[in-house]
Image (cartoon, rainbow, N blue to C red; front, side):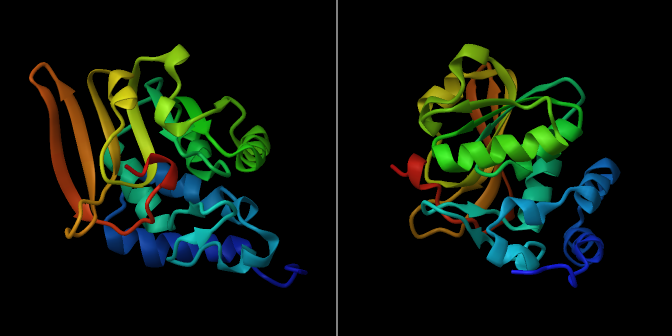
Length: 215
C-alpha cells in the first residue's frame, strides 16, 4: 500500500494534542518523543494509516501494539529517571522500548516471539540503539541483568509472574494493567517494599491480555 499521501507527522501531532493531553499526559520529554517517533513502522504495512488511532492494533501471533494513550500514561506512571534500569516485558515491535530508552533509561527488552523480536530489534537499532534485547519467555524476564528499578509489562495480566517480582530491586516498581475476573481492568503501580508488594490502582485502562502471561 502506498502511504505517500498520508501525513504521518501531522498524525503524530494530532495524537499528542487529541489523545495524550486530554488524558493528562503532561510529561514534556515523553510527549516530544511521541511526537517524533514513527509508530507506523511498528505495525503491518496495511495498518500504517491507523497507527495513531486510539485503538490497540493487532500484530501477528495474537499480539498487539497498545494504544498510544495507554502507553503514554503507563510510562508517565512509571516515573522513569535517567539511568534507571528498566525491563520491558512483551516488547513486541519495539515502540515502548524505544520511548523508554529515549527517556535516558538503561533499557532491557524481552520478547518471546522471534518474528516480533526481530522487528523490534530493527526498529530500536534505527531509533533507540542502546536497547538491550533478549528473545525468550516473557515469564522468565531477563534474569542475567537483574535487578531492575522498573518493570513495565506491555499488556494486561491477571497476576504478576513470581520470577518478574524476583527480578525487581528493593523499592522498585512494576507498572502494568491488571485484569481480575469480573472486575474492570486498571493500570497499577506495584512497589516492592520491605513488607512485600504494595499495589496502587491508578486509572482504568483497557489492554488485551498478554497471552504468554495468562494464568
